Structures are given as C-alpha cells and as structure tokens.
Amino acid sequence: MHQLSRGGRDCTDIYKDNPGRVELIALYPTYFPTLTSAWSGYDTLTTILANEIVGGEPEGIPRGMVDNIVYNGNRFIDRFVWPVAIQQQLSLNTPINLDVKADWIASENRGRIEYKAIANSVYNKPVLVIGGILEDKIIGKQSDRRASSGYIPDYEFNHVLRGVIGSSTGDTLSSAFPSTGFTVEKHYYVNKSPNWDEENLSILIWIIDAETREVLHCKSAKFSL
Image 1 (cartoon, rainbow, N blue to C red):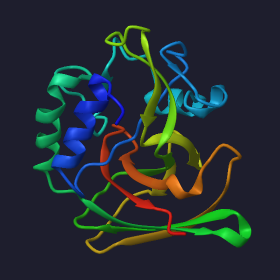
Image 2: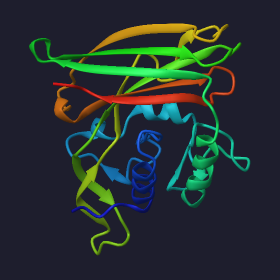
Image 3: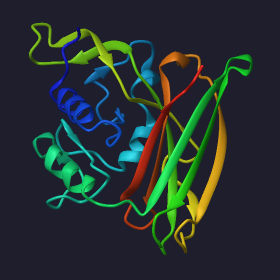
Image 4: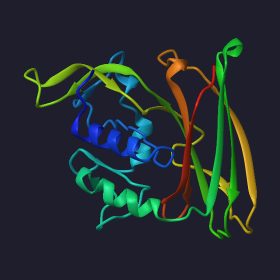
C-alpha cells in the first residue's frame, strides 16, 4: 500500500465520502517540474495542458480548485478548506445535468466518448465544455519530506490528466440553455497514446460558465473494454 501525499490523502477521503457526487482531476503543471518525476518520460505526468487549465501558478501546494470558484478571495484553496468549500457546492442545484458514456474499441485502438447535457432550468449564458482523459494506477516517484530519501519511489498516481478532447480552455457547448429540457448531445473519438494503459483510463467531462469559468457540473465514466 503506497503512502499518500497530504493533498492526495485529503482528496481521496473527500472522494470516498461523497460517492457519485465529487470528481477528481490531478494536474501536474510544468511550473513544478522538480516535485514529481514521471515514471516514463517527462510528459507522463507533467503536462502543458495542465498549465492551460490552471491558468496561473498556484501560490504554494498542496492547493486545489473547487469548481473553479473564488473562495475567500482565491481560486486556489488550501487543503484544510476543501471540505467546507465542497460541501458548499454540493448544497447547490446544478442548472445542467450530464450523462457520459465511454467505450474502448480494441479493434481500432481508440475510445469513443458520448455525452448529453440537459437543462434543469433556464441558463441564459454561454456554456463551455472540457473533456479530460484521466489515468489511474501510474507508478512513479513522488517528492515527500516524510521519507528519508526525500521521495517515495513507487507512489501510485490516480486521476491523472493525460490529455484533453478539444481545447483545454473549453469549447462552446451552447450559447445558452434557453428552456428546461434543452439538450445538447455530442460524441468524440480519442486515439491511444503510447504511454496510456486503456484498462486504467476514464473520461471526465465538465461544463463551465464561459464568463466566470465556474464549473456548473461534471461527470466521469470509465472506458468499458
């Protein structure tokens, strides 16, 4: 059993305590290339795509974003505040529901992703969508001051961003959701990267307000083989 980092442990606990209600995505921006060493090449964990999603350097770690909201004046929230901020968000009703499905087509060595966004209420603002390919069970080196060597050699990384569908800053889903029940459906294909293990891949779709960048809803699905 691998020892978790402080942030990783807290995220895992929150994720397990809210089954089906909380999604995780682990970003490894190039701002901190020395903190986490990839297990097989620089691009394995540390990605330019993560830079674009984060949109700026966090001040200290472990910190994270909760629905990309501004909480106490900051989008990058200290780990001690994550549970409170998350419960605040879980108490809200989402204006748009999501259904997500992902299948791996072995004969074509690629995955098919489809999703449906359905309005629960009128939302008269532009909405963007981002799709992230995540991978679990990546074994690599993790910086950890608690270890005598200064790092854990066989840390298990989960929910790691491996790629995106479309733009990492968001593609237009709809200019508005003008009525309850208004529906947008889309599907994509994603080709396998040499470093990916399709047995551990999933897709995370999240939709955001185009103006505030706040996450309105998100949902994941593991690729069925």
